[in-house]
Picture 1: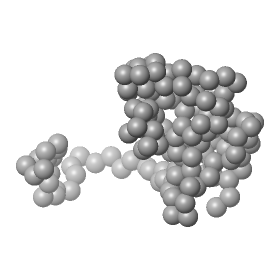
Picture 2: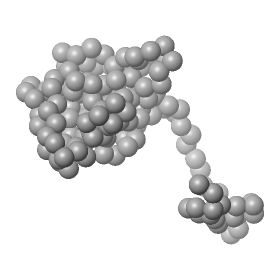
Picture 3: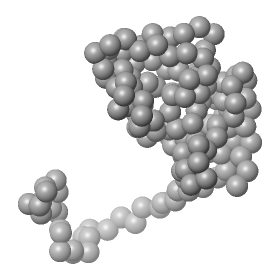
Picture 4: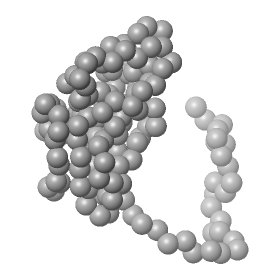
Length: 144
């Protein structure tokens, strides 16, 4: 699949780290470093603009190493970039650690997964088909 992209940053295009990676790393596009204090959230620009095809979305997800090692994650995980959005990709990062975190220009801040999705039409009914589970919710099986 080919996707049109405009790169107004001085960073490389999003890329897969390995042949079988599902997500591509996105990088911060900053004029100066940004300090993210504990429990603080900020919108971090990427300088990227994309044209996602109809029937697809781009999902913005945390980088596992950044989350584990530094406590930095994407606040609205996964964030969705719709096919009709043409603005700059911005990433809402939050610092869940107890230490300041400095974001530098070019730093890998998240990953993006392009995924197909369905558009549904609702079929309003009075009763749903019965299942073994029924209305059982969180922890309904009693198994860990």
